[in-house]
Image (cartoon, rainbow, N blue to C red; front, side, top):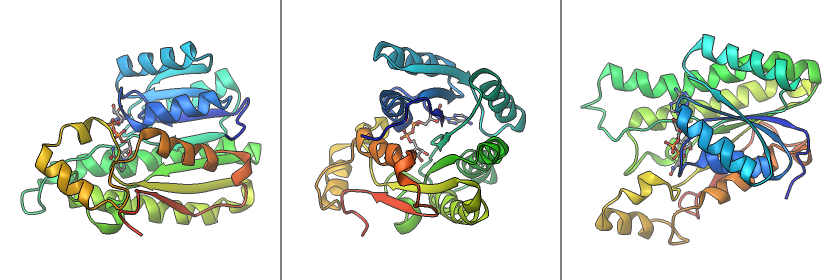
Length: 251
Ligand code: NAD
């Protein structure tokens, strides 16, 4: 795949056992990156760090709450102090909720936006100074197919709106930092074979499958490989772009 030897990569939300973030962290580590596993779930962080080390990679665990300015800045300072640089930031931490607009509370809307958009905003802002000094950086943001065609069975309109905001944010920032050696791109996964997918009842799962031309959900590895490419030096002339990874469910 793509060479990431000695690159320092932060992957937020990489503590979930069956989640996309853990596979991203493992994939970047396999390509040679020193991976900072950052998540609000400290047990999950430790499990991901152990999995990377067992596979022969380098990993460092950090407890992180992406919605807290203090937590985000403490992490970035710790990474720069101990590893000297930050080459890659993958903003993967995200939450969802299935609820109609009519039934949504202000607390619901705020919680979803706080993690999916403001958290991503804070983490990105915090690494820019270091990436600018290096004249090198790769920022990859997790959006969703829901941003483009609505949330379906998994998320409400607040989720879709937060993921659409990620796309606009990424393009704006891509322009701002294009001459600093920093690229900013997004990936928009369709349904992925994670815990949430496994929790669906048979009838719902069948109806979802019927809407996907490839007839199956995506695998976490299929998201992680695209992210590894965007995080690599080889993707040097790609910025402000979004890659749809959805088995054809949105073209
Ligand atoms: P997941 O729930 O398995 O993992 C999300 C991780 O984020 C968890 O480990 C959780 O602890 C962490 N997290 C939550 N709040 C946090 C906070 N405040 N600070 C730090 N970490 C926090 O989710 P997933 O299904 O692997 O999704 C990963 C990303 O991909 C999300 O951004 C999601 O919106 C996006 N996505 C997922 C799918 C899918 O089908 N699973 C589809 C499209 C997009």
